[in-house]
Amino acid sequence: MADWYYIRNGSSFDNDMYFSEICVDYFNRGNESDVSAFYHFYMGMAQKYYGEFETLYNSEDPREYIKTNMKVYVKIKYIEYVVMNISEFKEKNTLEQVKLKFQEKILSVEVAYKEKNDKLGRYIFDVFYFLSQMLCFRQIDPDEDNKSLKDIDVNIGIIANSTGWFAINSYLFAYINGVHLVGVPTLLSKFDGRTGCSRVFLEHDVSHIKEIIDGSEEYDITRQLYESIMLGEYNKQIKEILLFCLWFQLHETSVSMVIKVPIPKISIYPYGFFFIDNRATRVFSEVFDHIDSEVRKYILDHYEDIFGCLKRIGKDLGHLTKSERRYMRDSLFAMHRIYDTYNFDIIKEYIEKGNDNKPSLRFSILYLYGCYMLYGLIQKIKP
Image 1: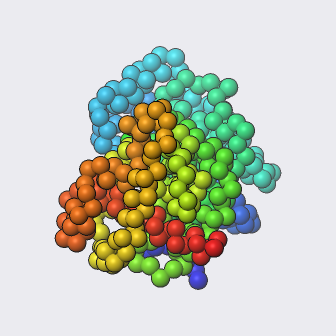
Image 2: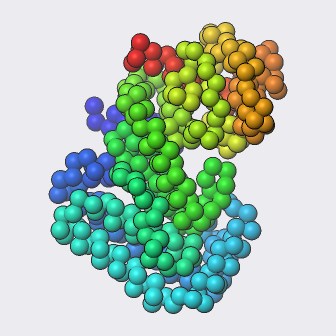
Image 3: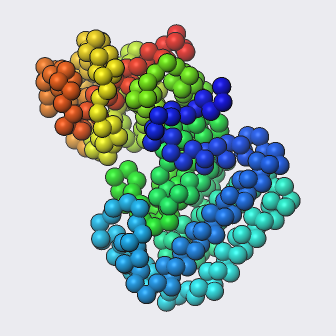
């Protein structure tokens, strides 16, 4: 079935799928047409990004330009930081120096393309890494080239869409096809509840790749789960919930973010599907703006089974060390957080009435529901 990997029905999880498709085609098929499309697309985007840098460099009022052209809201202090960087950068670097360095980078890509070099993707990454430095107005440093990808040998796809944000489904489709997506914003952008300029954002995404590679044994099960979700008879919201839980465990949950508590027959990945920290609950609380009727009915029909998981988690906290308990002040079980804040009657009433005015509670309930559903899927894949 063509385009089986789209949720459709206006799902924002499908946004920017073109980036994923063009990278997957290049890295996996690599025929002449795919290579040409990949090369010309990213060369065009590189010129666009360089134009953004040049406009900022020449701007008489960069502060106003950034405020006017920002795609996301950021606090003024971050804009002031970039404006200060611009001023210091211009004192040490002429536009001609930057342009010459950029042209050298572009030439290296052109040569790789003409010579049919199988590392063309890495040369293109070098161009965007350089551009991310310039858009942060960092000093030109030849030793910085490719530093962030040292010892990483994977296929990298660039999300060059101004914000650097990728959509959940677009990311997962690329991942199961052997491509790791990273974002390169043109101006300031947000990530994981923080704000940063282009290079900071890019290096943050690269750091996630390193964590994912460390857990690469999960690739096969992730691919099977993704295919089960996308080919399954699920409505739009259910697919989005399942994909979010799958992506969160793959991309956001690392050893540094969780406390590993052994819960037999609940954990799916080594870190366990039922771990999510306080920061994540806050950052992602608006991912789902409602609980649709089919999901609501399922949760109520399977209420005891789903929330029974929470009761088992609650019983297994006694063996935690003092240091783990201190850590839990900042990184909580999302469901245990609910348990501390609400009793089960309140949660059930919230679901029954369809009152969706508590974003964090709504997100946590849907996260647990998604993990419960994924647990059922994994039992079918690996009984």
